[in-house]
Length: 133
Image (cartoon, rainbow, N blue to C red):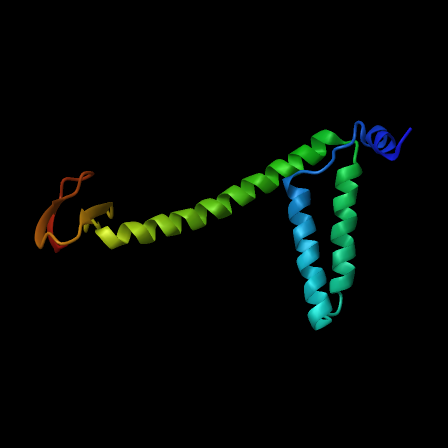
């Protein structure tokens, strides 16, 4: 029996690697490089703790718990990415449009730029007001 078969037999029923474990490995690598460059106190221990937790997750037989941890990580990652995507889309949108708030109900209204003075009707409360676009 070669080493690959032995490893496959050992890993049978264990959780293995997922997105959270890849993220933890990247964090450990970055901290290791920072530790080598700046010799920060405690960063070496932190790297060992992160790697230990990562190996604990990979070799764990409690698959539902590790799956739940990964799902929480993916949800947080999604929220962070959506936040930055929203900022990027908003910046691109502001190049072509003005965003005004209705003085009565504070509803946001998007108006194209370069149309001069326009009368805006709020779609929510039907209040009319004038702004320069």
